Each structure stands twice: as structure tokens, then as C-alpha cells.
Image 1 (tube, rainbow over the protein chains, first blue to last red):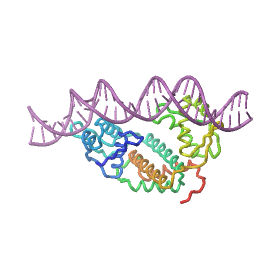
Image 2 (cartoon, rainbow over the protein chains, first blue to last red):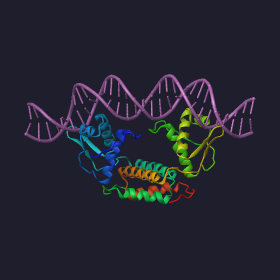
Image 3 (tube, rainbow over the protein chains, first blue to last red):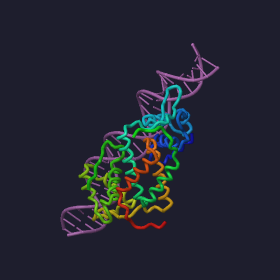
Image 4 (cartoon, each protein chain N blue to C red):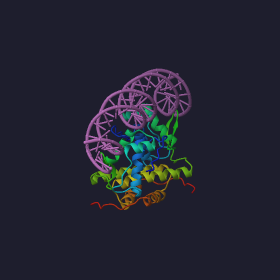
Length: 133
Length: 133
DNA sequence: CCTACTGTACTAGATCAAATAGAACAATAG
DNA sequence: CTATTGTTCTATTTGATCTAGTACAGTAGG
């Protein structure tokens, strides 16, 4: 587990950890059944309080990314969101509205933005359970 | 100016205000030269402290979206980022990596994501100064 | 069974960001 | 000159974040 914390970042540490794990899953570096480092171990690695790691793992479990089992450890589930379809679509729509607005103000054209999304998509490992429409 | 604050949102008020103004500019509802409500006026509208509005306007000016002129008011510039090209590209790349990771964990396919981006892009009014490549 | 590992829960405290309140100053428009 | 604009400042409250330390609970393996 190569987690890098940026102490200067405005994002809280527990979110940085959670996001990096989500990134590893999206890339396929971590997948169904893989074991995460223990709370204490990761805390030591990253030089952070165990409570902070716990908080990251809580977030990830609430989002369905991992499963926590007392005594044995935390594991990647390989599943996604758990929200109902309407809510998922709403979230995606919000996310894209934010993304497009920010990209626009960075001064990019719609072509630039589409291309950049494609680059991002190429880094992701899409083979998951089918979802019903 | 129809600004809506969600007190439940994890995002700070000053960011919500700034983002909604950026959204209005991206949609074309606000454009070059348009005057924003005064600090005190908007603060009253949204039932928020004037200092909070000031902070939103500071953010927007730092990003080049608006221009503040003491005595006269705040105005849309119609310009974008002001960062150099390398930094802009870096920001776009980061933004997209975040977006794709989140969308992935919401359980969407790369096709879903591309489509949703296109929907978002359709809501944006792209006619701006040319940028050198 | 025992031990060492795992996650969990709790309290307490330090630090910082966000927001409010209120006062005062500075530049502009009319 | 006056009203309106943005600006600056200090003080205070609230909540989130993070640290620290302790203790408890479930699991795996000898």
C-alpha cells in the first residue's frame, strides 16, 4: 500500500486516504478480496493517528468499497455504491455539473474536456458485475 | 441573482456562493461586464454574514472570474484561469482523475460516464477568447 | 486455552476553518 | 457632500479534524 499524504492539502487526511484506496480499486491495483493493511499498520506507515485511519475505513465501508471484520481485517468488496438507481444518477449528474463548470473556468473547450475524460477513463479497469438498467 | 444555500451541505457557504456564480457564468446567465449584487445586498438576500460574501468574492477574483472595484462594485470579467498552461493542464488532469474515480465507484460504465459528461457540456455556453495552444 | 493479532469504542484535548458580529476606513458615483 | 460600494480589523462561537491514550471485542493460529 503506497499511500501518500499531503499535509498541505485542504482535504482532510482521512479523505485523502479513502480516495487513494478508491483510486487503487478503480485502477485495478486492488480488487475483490484483497486485504488492506491493518489500522495500526497503515497508521504507522503514514505517520498518522489510528483513529484517522479508522475514519477512512468507515467512509469506505459506508460507500461499499470495503468490508471490515473485527479480528481478521478489512477487505475490498469489489462492489459499488449500494444506492438506488435514482440516487446514483443524481450523484453522477451533480458530479459532472461540478466537473464541467470547473473545467470551463480553467479555460478549456468542450473538446479538451472530452479528451481529458477519455484519458482518465483509460486509466480505469472496467470489468464489474452487470447492473440492471 | 438566485443563490441557494444548503445549510446541511458539507461545503462551506462561501464556496457554495462562489460555485453557483461560476455555474451561472458557465451557463451564460452571467457574462462579461455584468454586475454582481453588492456584498451587503447579497448577504441580506442569502441571510449570511457580509464577511462570508466577501470571502466568496475574494475566491472568484483570485480565479479571475470577477473584478472587484471599491466604490463601484463587482463585475464578471469573462476571462478564465490566468494560470499558465502547464498548471491548467495539471489541474484538469487532477479534476478528471477525481471525477472518473468517483463515477466508477458509483457503479457506472465508461459509456455512462461519457454520456453524462456530454449532458453536462450541453449546459455550458462555450464562446470565449481563443487561447494559444 | 492462550496469545497475538485484528477492529471498535470511548474520553479528553489541541488546533484550525468557517461563520457571525460589529466597528471603522477607503474609493467611487451621483 | 452623501450614499453606496468594497475593505479591513478584532473578537467570538461553533464544529471538524486530528492526536493521545486506554480499554474492550472478535478472530486466527499454535
